[in-house]
Amino acid sequence: MKSEANVTDTPSNAPDYSVSDIAFALKRTVEDQFGFVRVRGEISGYRGPHSSGHAYFSLKDENARIEAVVWRGVFGKLRFKPEEGMEVIASGKITTYPNASKYQIVIDALEPAGAGALMALLEERKRKLAAEGLFEASRKQLLPYLPRVIGVVTSPTGAVIRDILHRLADRFPVHVLVWPVRVQGDSCGAEVAAGIAGFNALAADGPIPRPDLIIVARGGGSLEDLWGFNDEVVVRAAAASDIPLISAVGHETDWTLIDYAADVRAPTPTGAAEMAVPVRRELLDRVDDLGRRLNGGAARALDLRRTRLVSAARALPRPGDMLALPRQRFDAVANALGQALTANTSAHLRRFERLAARLTPRSLLAGQALLAERVAGLRRRADRAMGEALGRRTAGLERLNGILEAVSHKATLRRGYALIRNAEGTPVFETTAIADGDRLDIEFRDGHVKVVAGHEAGGPARSGRKGARGKDGPDQGSLF
Image (tube, rainbow, N blue to C red; front, side):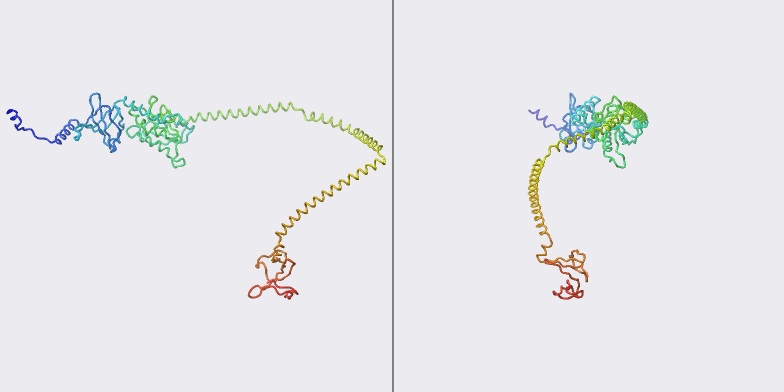
């Protein structure tokens, strides 16, 4: 017991450290030892960026795990976004997190670990976009036969645009608009998508002509070089384009996701130019050939119709032959006409004689009586019909007369009004239509009165007394 007490009470020369001292000393040691590293591993526990914009997950292999963090500013610039189960190579620095006594890697760059990882990511993205229907054949548009304006989304300094322009000039020169973009690198996908959307946004009647066809082109390269054309924004922009689009990315064996969303895929940029326009010389030759065929066909059609007309004309009889038989028949009928008239006259004469022989005074009297009775019956029917017709006409006339009396001015006169006419017999309705000395006729319900118009000082004068003499003659009153 004594020896144990002596050990416990023995003072130590080791300095005392706080928890923070130890934590930050370890932090400095780790950061000094592993300033910048590239770590290969599989992404685990990734659930998307945090609400703060930072991303937290782990990198693991078969034996160990390390925590990883991507700050918000770096996450937006990553060419490849983290995906669960994706094998990647993360570049950054190793540090510690004192609050949890753990170490972690702060990632500055992230890339798939080799072509196998890229192909797996590509296949996963392809399945996702195909499930949305972006690659459906029903969405494909037909290319215009002869576009007036072609928009090309590509690098303005590469050999691709020169090949396209050269091929278009050889086949059929058209107006070409170039939308300059980077065809490789982190910003490639966003720039290509903006080019496709920009061409679609041009107004049809604007200062810059709207393309009838779009070509997205790039030369060959590795999977990493062409990765920008596998970007979702590029695929969605190609699928949403209202303008027909040809994808010409890489060589014939290179396939990118834009090839599936485009309306047509060309094996090379030069092949896209050949698909875009026909050969002008071939068109001219074709037009000339069609023109010759048209002229030849028209000539043959005219010859055929001329031959048919001649044959039909030969089959027709001559005009003289056509009239010979009717003329002969006419002569025969004319010759027989005199005999027919004589025979007809004789037949009527015989009939008259037979009827005359049958007539006697008694038959004449009986016939006359029968005729008189028949005439009397007809007269009675006529009188009855005439009476009925006159009755109907009289009733209609009375109705019309009643209507006439109702609307006639004489009915108005009977109610105490008078009608004034001028010398021409035209009714006068306003005093402004009467001048001094005008002769007027006033119609009352029981007769007419002739007057002369005149005005006194201070206003219109009334008519004189009955029988008074005016200046214009005896028994002539004044209207006013």
